[in-house]
Amino acid sequence: MCGFIGLIGVEKASGALSIGLQAIQHRGQDATGIGTVESGRVHLHKELGSVAGVFTAPVLVGLAGRAGIGHVRYPTVGGGSREDAQPFHTRRPGVVMAHNGNVTNLPELEEWLNSRGIRVQSQCDVEPILLVFAEALGERRPSGHTAEDVRYAVGEVFRRVRGAYSCVALLEVDGQDTLVAFRDPHGIRPGSYAYNSEGAWAAASETVAFDALGFTRVDDLPPGEVMLFRPGHAPIRLPIEKAEPRPCIFERIYFARPDSQMEEGRIYQTRWALGERLGAEWKARGLEADVVVPVPDTSRPAAQAMAEVLGLPYREGFIKNRYSGRTFIMPDATTRQAALRLKLNPIPEIFEGKRVILVDDSVVRGTTVRRLADLVRQVKPASVHLAVYSPPVRNPCYYGIDMPSRDDLVAARLSPAEWAPAFGVDSVTFLSPEGLREIIGRPVCMACFDGDYVVPVSAGEAAEIVADRAKVAG
Image 1 (cartoon, rainbow, N blue to C red):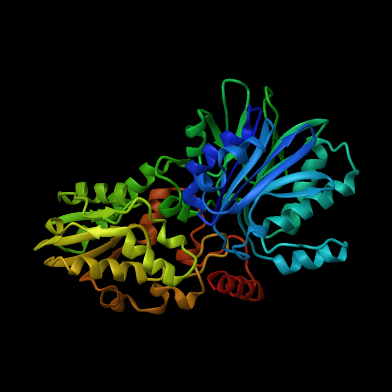
Image 2 (cartoon, rainbow, N blue to C red):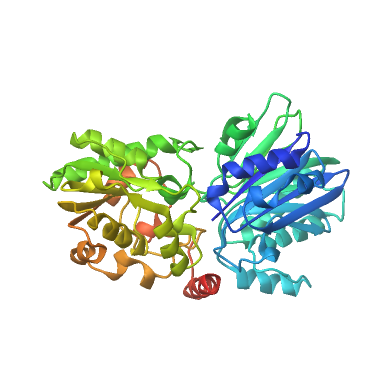
């Protein structure tokens, strides 16, 4: 899982990109990069670490230009080295590109590129996308590329690249510096675009980047199309391939910030509605409790809504270490466990002698929820009930969320009767798949819950992805 932002028509674009990237830092903590364009020259800097740590004032000064692309990375494919950080740049033709997503047919792409005499140098899957795009542009003409050339090149990406991806790129089109943005035909990974009062344009993984920069959101990037942005001009939309949009449900449940907007509206409102539905399903089981406590931070809207439905008090029961990262996207189990010990500390008065509902967004491996239950048991509650505002995760994600092989998914490995003992709680209530579909109200990708993969993944491709993630985890 990663995050990008592209800008064009902004004075000192690198500084603005740094601010926008800090707004989406939650999408990736391993590495960050910025590439800018000035008078046909590309300035590129990328490094391991956080945005604020990497992009100091002297570094930003060296990234001149009024157009640029920024990226934060959490690797689900490839290693965590500096060489795999984005954006990537190709000199023929001159293109800077970054993406969010996961390519599922990397070996096939590399074989095709090798047959053309093109070698992939990194383990990052945006590089094959960039090389396919650049090769297609070269097929049309060596330079002086037009909007129709870009349409053709993105069409070749759609034809050859399988998986889920949202991309931004900078290149010269029709003789002008142009910000190019596109999403795969199903729009699995998110992307939106915005403008400001000075005629500048932006495209980003989440709208909170626009808020930080004072841009006004226009809409989501249309799946299966490519958009071209130039300062002071209306965007150009070029349709390429029609398919049913199926955006990722896990963005709504966990990854996106609650103040971001996606296709069906504000993420906060979606999580609130999921909490209301979870409350109704919990109540139907005939269970009883005294207090509702969220597992911070993602679960707060759902826990508040659930408390209202049940007529129970909502309480903040954990103090969170603000300098701790998101444990789900830590690279290995040892790091996740150590991070959790630093991350949360229970307030005894909230739990002692109470029948407590812990509200969480999801259960993937099960280690985090078990540790939480152990922490809560130490402050002597009467009982602990886990309520999760998503269904059980039973299937791996191959589209950019770090959900490992099926053997590592606790809900797939254990029967429902075994969940509560395994998690160390008195009961477990997952939101039903039917409830989730009803609340979202539109087709989405929820393969991690129901096994319905929007883009088919062969057994060989799945094995390659699992093996690659095992290398990332070390």
